[in-house]
Image 1 (cartoon, one colour):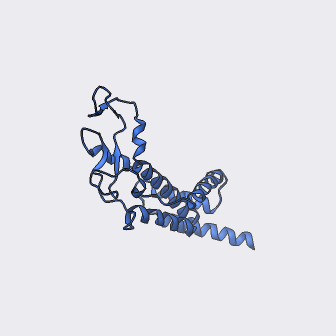
Image 2 (cartoon, helix red, strand yellow):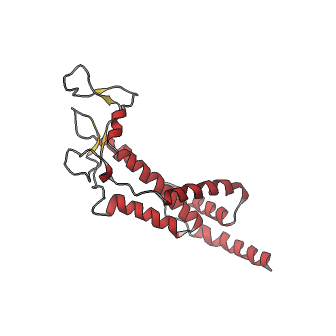
Image 3 (cartoon, one colour):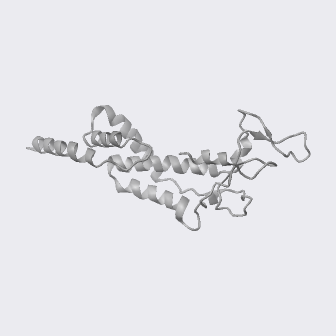
Length: 189
């Protein structure tokens, strides 16, 4: 009797789940629905991957929310809510008394960029919310969606911690500019 009920449930799920395609912009909705069905039916070939995803998601449940307010350097605007970063391939010019303007050293990343943490904050936010949202979709556990929403709220909506909706100070080059349009690549994810 139990196996018969399980079989009926699996047949029903095979029709229902694919019909409820997720609203996604980068991922393939049909592939996501197939993965969800495989997760629900515990298909052998995917169990290791699902276990790995669940471990990552559980790790992110403990993550402290990140914010542009965490940085120690204030953007040229004077508002820490503004996203700020430094162009990675520009270096202090030792032939100048104040080192300005910075010189381009193509392909050689300046470790000084790590003094401004907004690009790291954005990477952490992107990675954690991607994993948590996938875990919610595949496992249906509300705790993953709640944590994901909390991280997004902290980063973009809460008055005290939100990022202003601009990238005016992304990829600045000391002595040349306070930001460049190319700064948008830091938010590509």
